[in-house]
Length: 178
Image 1 (cartoon, rainbow, N blue to C red):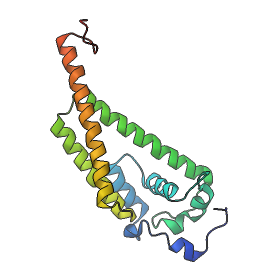
Image 2 (cartoon, rainbow, N blue to C red):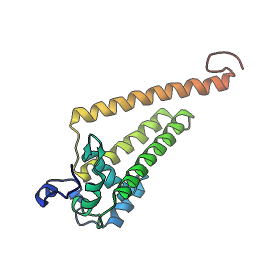
Image 3 (tube, helix red, strand yellow):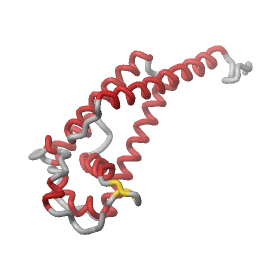
Image 4 (cartoon, rainbow, N blue to C red):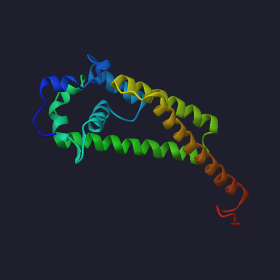
């Protein structure tokens, strides 16, 4: 993509976020803050960066210039640097949230059933956000993602159990006495 704005008919083909058309940024942001770590700005820009990915990376200039036309609750254009900062902030928050979750899982703070409940609630919020932004996964893709997550979580639970048991038994991870 070049830096020139797309014609109106091309921008209107972008059908994301139509379910929040007419919603104020503040309201979208409040919902996201209640259910996630990200802001409305970070969510919208991360979605746009994924959708407008080029071989050289996301098209920051295009996204910034057309932000109000692409996302109903965004009212101002952004510089390419502001778009990049929001995308970077989104990535950092996702990584930090993942680290927090895995720490809680690995230290034995949650039972397997509690972890399953947390993952279920998280997947419900994720599905809702995908629905709101107008993105959908077909059922096979959704099942594949859930199966991969379940597999990883089972391995985390098993590893955490071994680590916790070894602490109680006084042996290290190699089975040697401490």
